[in-house]
Length: 275
Image 1 (cartoon, rainbow, N blue to C red):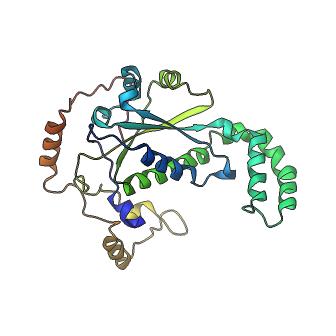
Image 2: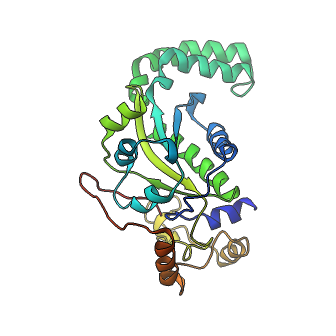
Image 3: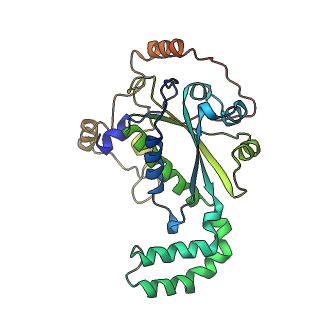
């Protein structure tokens, strides 16, 4: 599919065929897409642990389960735990990463002059503030870009995903996954072959364009051009909105077919998933 169409067809999938395993090659492609994402100073703070449902302990699956995530956790054959590693921002490493950009001609126009400038101007700054930078919004934005690229590759490969988050039992999850102290779990991604239709009941209704985006200053809406909207509909980035007329019947059928236990263990949880 073309990029715009992949974006248009993306849905948060909550029902998967549990009997159909996800190929390791497709997970590798997703992770490679994440690895290729932009990140400040090329620090590469994005990390992930792939959890195969059939190899995971009941204790781990329970610890990873967010509220309203019972459908995904019962049916997805694979989960990816995405986290940011603060150690990636350690000052000397960060400086080395920047110099690597200079050496590969991705930063500056004069390699040696750029490296000297990095040592002179950035080394003192990074030494003083790298710990703060490691947990600043930009660090998690970079991880988000990586996850987004992995998501689009998943859909291009015929898979479905759903991002889940919440105040999980982080201490327990960290211990079970043997994560370093520098790790901050951001989200869990369920991955599998959708048991729902590709439309999944229609495209999720979002807030109006002009209520989200502005020109020059806050309060001056960026007005969408109708012709551009039509072009995006033709490219299938904009699709028919949910709920489609047959969605209720689809959900009933899928729940019956998969034997989903509609039990919601919400104790200690607050948030259930993306849309």
